[in-house]
Image 1 (cartoon, rainbow, N blue to C red):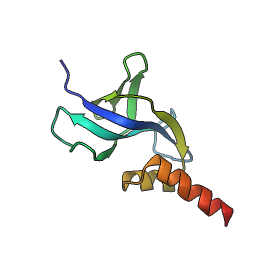
Image 2: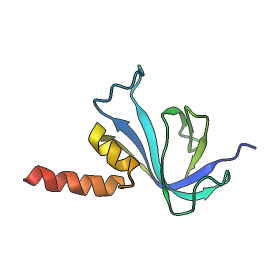
Image 3: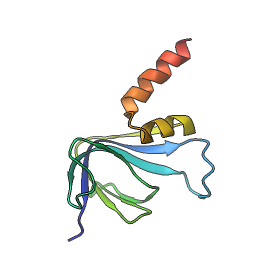
Image 4: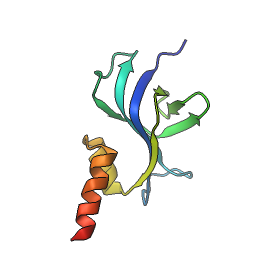
Length: 108
């Protein structure tokens, strides 16, 4: 059985305007680690993956280009972010925090 990383509060992230040399939409996975059977991440920490290779919605699983498998727990979301917002995700901001910051910025 393949070892997986289990994520909650997850989001499939589409980076809009990114030119990263792929023909399809650049999709990544962001989430909070519930359990990492590979021992790479601590429970409660966030992870932002490499490019998504495949999504199995019925199994709630995502496989990345780096061949890691993620089990999606609970409900999640699909979001679109700019390149700048994607960098914020990679730095540890959550999708909700980015959304709040974007709405504040757009009011100014």
